[in-house]
View 1 (cartoon, one colour):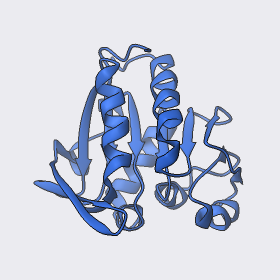
View 2: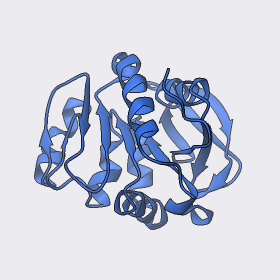
View 3: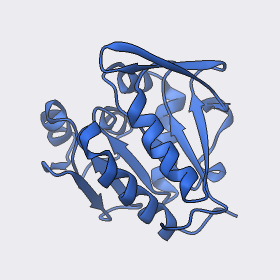
Length: 188
């Protein structure tokens, strides 16, 4: 497996509504590759995940978005869940962090409904990505080229963008995000 030793990867989620497996599977992949995952949210304490429409587990927040900058992380993962990105895109600090990560050239991985936050941050124009099919029109309207693929790696922009459609795509998504995150030098 590709080595992420010395790299800090932020997982940005709202206090409620992140799809649990879209958080835990890439988190475990980052850990297995030697990276340091950090759970970032808009509020301190814990986040409550979901398993589709049912409650999932709660996870302890490592940092609040107001205390994190793009200079603190080597990559960003945006899990899906329908409610999660909807909450995030309403938080100006979360949107600003996403935008800053893109502009600093840090890689981003996003799955399922997660691209809604990218649309709000206005960072998908001219990019090619995939998502849950219901976001296709939103992404196209925001200037993205939408494709229906298990995983899409887009390097046509200031950073690398890894995207996938759904939980069934997680094995390919996890491999791609680890490989792409390892290609970007660790922050100083």
